Image (tube, rainbow, N blue to C red):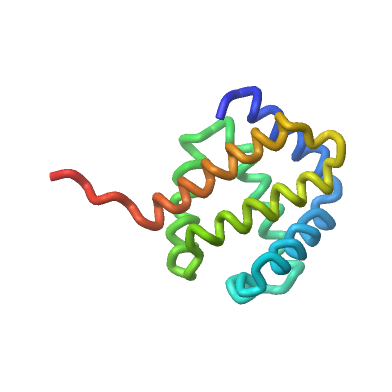
Length: 140
C-alpha cells in the first residue's frame, strides 16, 4: 500500500467513525446473510461484536502508517483465527461484506480510488492473517 491509499482509508474511516456502531451492525447483517455459518464463529453478543470490530478497525486504520507495530498484532490475530476455524474463504466473505458496507456508508465519496485502497488493505490483512496461521517451513 502506498501513502496515498493509506490517506484515502484514513479519510474514509474518519467519515465513518462517528456512525461506527450503525455501520458495524450493517456490516454484520451483510456478513451473516452472505454466510450464516459465520454467526457461530462470533460467540459474543452483537454489541460485543460491534465494539470489537470498531476497535480492530481503529487499530488497523491507524496502524497502516506503522507496519512494524501492526504486522505482529495481525500475525497474532491470524493464529487465533486459525485456531477457531476461520480460513481463507471466510476472509473473502468478510472482505466482500466490508467493501459493500463501505459503499453503502460512504455513498458517493466511496470512489474507485477508495475501493482500490480498501481492497489492497483487505488483501494485505488477509495475506498476513493467513501467513501467520500457516507459516512456511524454514529453510535448513
